[in-house]
Length: 540
Image (cartoon, rainbow, N blue to C red; front, side, top):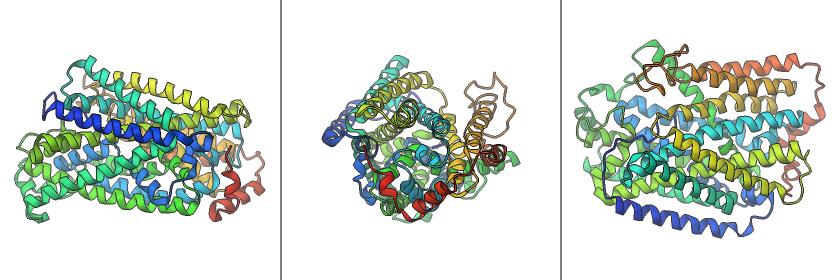
């Protein structure tokens, strides 16, 4: 997720016709699922939360589908192939993050809210300012995440379908955006969830096939595989198996890793498109089961990426992978193992991954605007019957168009910072406010606004003035432009503690605000026990 997305070299691999046919079959199948799921999309609960009809296991599979983006599949495999142990640390960070979500967020969120994160934040605070702040934060996370996925889709599909030139890649991005809009407009959360379930199953099966294939070449002896990877990577050698190859060179790189890990582990529990999935189940027990299933599926998948990454290091010809094409590791390995057909299947799975993630992000952004801004702020909680869903659909259309235009503009650039920003914003702005709202009685509206807006501003400011944007060979503006003063690639180690601190300072600055102890007690009982949650979840 923080590893760079697909920005492939202009090298044709496989057969574009075969890839196109496989892509087409997947699109037709998922569209059929979406249209079938759309039959009962009538109320806000149907559109936002799939009628709360999904079981824990179903939602857990969908969560894993939402969470395992193209960067998880392509980026982590490439990071392991190039940096070994340090690359696998991405997987560990992403997996450990789910323990935070399980222990601190999932059950409490489901018991307290209705459709969005802002429902929880505004439960006992002032509705209008808090909902507006939460919606802005949510839209910010979704927008930067969408840009990265759309640009990644352009590079991946253009490579595998033999599309060349900026115009052709822009057309590919537009097609992905149109499909995304269709999934959301027609299927709502039900259709999107089933697409994510199908995608998650395909992703785990595809990664499992590649894992077994790689291990079979070394008689299922992991030590032999690791030895072959070391032998085939003379520049790294034994360092491929030990810490420090990527993050151990200097004190700054070590600090950068701590900062990145902090953003990954805490950011996941604040990602709005992941949080929204907890509302698709009927009760908190199923929400807890959802996270348990997601942890198992994501954990197994990341073990697969370990074998795939070291398999690429062992089996691809020396010099094939560089920092410029690191994310080609999985497709190149698929082509090396099974030729055109396996490459086409892996490419289709990666394409499915992008479609599922962008659909989940789009419906989250649409729900945030329609429910938090339109229904709760503009209409003061009394929208006209049916209008909230109509506004959500219109918002999805606008978000899709903006994502297409942004993806076209970002195409061909290093979009890693966009995903890193999404995680850093979620960890800096969303999580501190969520935890304070749930557990700190004195927390007030001023504290929430300081935490959200302050965390958002600090996070964006530090990334703009970091080496990710200027001053380095892989920066957005290259080495020729240098206005970076913040030395780290990820601002988490600074922005997250400051956001927590701002929440405390803002609370004491606004100390004259009366604490609604009755509301806090109701929230505490409801979040911990689920008592009264059905009343909050009563649907339009």
